Image 1 (cartoon, rainbow, N blue to C red):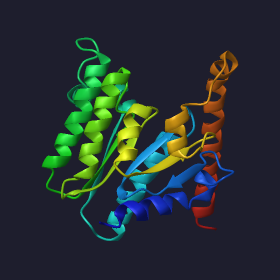
Image 2: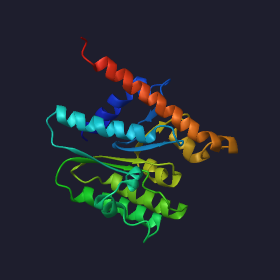
Image 3: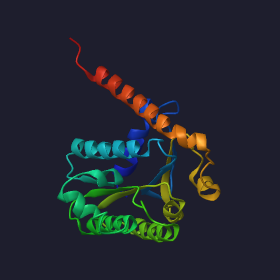
Image 4: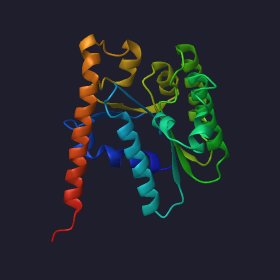
Length: 233
């Protein structure tokens, strides 16, 4: 076991202004048998991707601090909208193929790259199941679980961000640790057993406002951090 995973997770979790109980993105940490494998789950607009990017940045900072050659590879669905050849090579063409098949290709390519890399790395898959039906999600979750139980020598950590019980379930059963993010912070096994909290039409209409409010709060935290870090004249 390496200490990059728990060290980075705990350092990020200690940032109470962003991830504490009364912060924009509150979290619940649950340790599993695999301290280097993590599942991030929670409601829409709860801050999962913000947490994921914060952990990625913390991993890179720890590696730099320790003078260790290391890369945190993140594949996020937000990257689908990027332009250029990299996006096409990573995600394929939405015009020529199904969204679900592109998601499968991207996820499996990420695992393949991790197995073949010669440098120390972390692999982060941010919502890798876009466009997949439940049966395919379950199959992909089982592939992730097999990978998690047999991490390649150079893979120091593996993280999956998902809304899907079919993705999360096999990983949790394999021993993955969990971070629940946002207003619904029920323990992960309770969420897997009972499912998402029911929503109404009003909740659908309000989701945009919830997302905007969280972004405003995150921006406030960032500004306050910048002010605190700025040298005094």
